[in-house]
Image 1 (tube, rainbow, N blue to C red):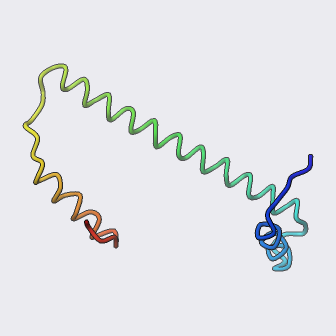
Image 2 (image 1 turned 90 degrees about the horizontal axis):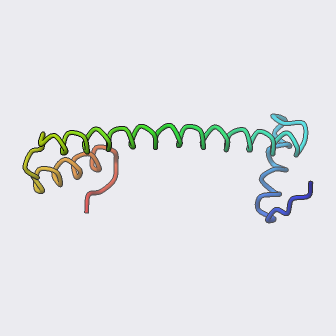
Image 3 (image 1 turned 120 degrees about the vertical axis):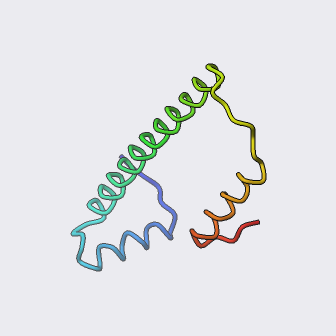
Length: 90
């Protein structure tokens, strides 16, 4: 298999090998692919959890178990979370 890389990615691979953590460019690429696969797996699990939470909400709404929408309260919660995570609320 032949893969074309940008000069920046090639340089990154060479730097990783030069650190001594990896013996070859192939090892760096294999590790990168393992990490990509792991990230995809975690992301899929998160999406599944969100889908389940959405379904719970839909089921509750179908049963009439809903509360009035508090837009200002919801925005305040979002802004508070964004500020506490280090991001500026807009």
